[in-house]
Length: 452
Image (tube, rainbow, N blue to C red):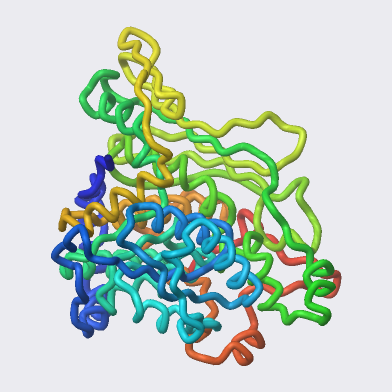
C-alpha cells in the first residue's frame, strides 16, 4: 500500500549532498566490504525469513509482533539488548502470540552494546528499535552485512548520524536491500489518498502548513526507582540508558522522537525537506533531575524551497490545550491530513477503510522482500529525522539555521567508542551531559548555545 517505495525526497537529498559526497564516499566504501546476503533478489513464498530484533522495549516488541504477523514463513531467531530483564519479558510476550515463530536459542540472545553485530549476523531481516541515538551505527552495520532492515523513527538525532544513514541508504540501494522506516502514516490509507489529491493539484498551490504534537509528558523512569529495583547505585550512563527519553544523545528531544511524525507528513506534502528553520523553545514546567536536558516546548517556522512555511509546535505541558495534527493550506482549500478531509471549493472526505498502519508497513516490507520490489524508505526517513534535528538546533540556539549550514557542522552527540568495549567498560563512560551538584542537568540556552 505504500506510495513512497521510491522516496519523493530522494532528488532533494542528492542535491543537498553534492557538497558532502566526498565525505560519504569513505563510509560507503566500508559498507560495501561484505557480500550481499540471501533474499536480496526476492524470496519464494515458502522461504522462511529469519528476523533479528535489536532493542526489546515496547516499540521493538511491537515491531517484532507485527513482523511475525506478516505470514507463516517468518521466525525470530536472534535478539540483542543491554538489559536482560527487558529481553526476558519481551521474548515471553512474543512467545505467547507466536509460539512456533519465536525460535531464539540461548546462544543467540546477545547482551551488550556490541550485541547488535552478532544478532544481525543470524538474520535475513533486522528490526532496529533501540534508543534512536544508536540507529545510525546499527543501520550501517546491517547494510554492511547485507541485511534487509526495518528501523524505528527517528533514524538519527544529530548531523553526524544523518550523514551516516544517508551513506548507508545509498549502499543499501546498490545492494538491493529493502529498508522500511517506522513512519507508519506513509502506509495509512487515509493519509495516502489525501496527500495524493494534494499532489494531483486538487487544492491548488500549497501556501502554508501547520504541524502540531501538543500533549502531555510521556513516561519517565526516576533514578531512585531504578536504583531501588536494581538494589544498587547506577552509573550515570546506566541511568541515562534506562531513562533515555530525556537525553539528547539517545532521544534527540521530543521534537525528534515524537514530533517527527507530523514533520514527516509535511515533508511528504512538500516532496522534500525545508531549507531553513527558526524558532524558540525552553523548559517551563517539566523540571527536576529526572527530566534530563530536553525542552518541554518547541515552536518552529520551517521554510521550504518554494517559500511556503510550516508552523510547527510540540509541547509536553500539563493543563494546556492538546492537539496532534497536520494541516495544509492551499489556494483551493484546506486539508486536515489526519482526519482525511479537504474543506473549501475542493471539499472532499475520505470514506474508505484500511488496515492498521503499523501492521501494513511490515506487510509492505515483507512483500517487497519476497517479490523483489524496489523499497528504500531510508532516504525520506533520514530527511524527516534531520528536519527534526534542524528544528531542535534552531530552538536550542535561538538562531535561524539553514539546512545547508546545519549539514556543514560537526554536530555529533554519540558517546565515542561505546560499541567497541565490554558492557562493564561502557557503563563507566561519561555521557555528553552529566548532572551538577544539585542533581540538575544544564539546559540549552537560546542565544548562547551553538553547534560546531
